[in-house]
Image (cartoon, rainbow, N blue to C red; front, top):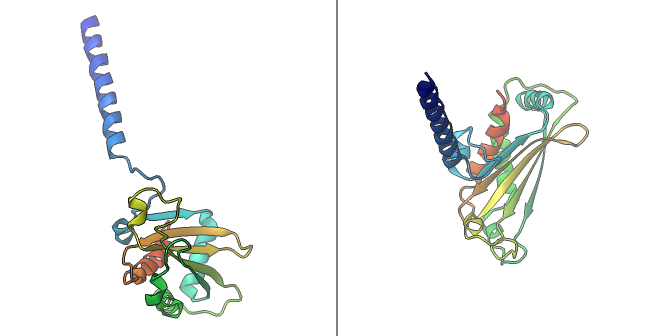
Length: 185
């Protein structure tokens, strides 16, 4: 009987150790990376919701078409900025407006607006804080934020784009909006 208990304990420990090793080997190397949508898995994406109840209210405002959008750009500071020779904020604003229209289910004129903001950042490859080759591969990233009436962030997503001339910014913007629209649904 003691022999069987010893064999059982040994097998149990081997299974537990094997499972632990397998889990560590297959664990995502960067915490917070989002891969819930196919568009998020194509490039590096970070997503975070801060208040699920307020996110539901914000998604309802999106579906009613009551949206206020602010946009900004941030050029590279250490390297020569080239991205915004090809990318114009007016063009990205049109992409955002057209994409937001796709999520309107019933247009209404509520007094409350959904407060969205997005920033397009050019990757500054000469930034002394960027030490790895991997941090210099992407062309930039889009940060999309949703704020409540008190101006607190309730949802935030950051999605990279790879093309140095910004040809794939539209996909990153569309993915950002889809990420918010489908969050916890």
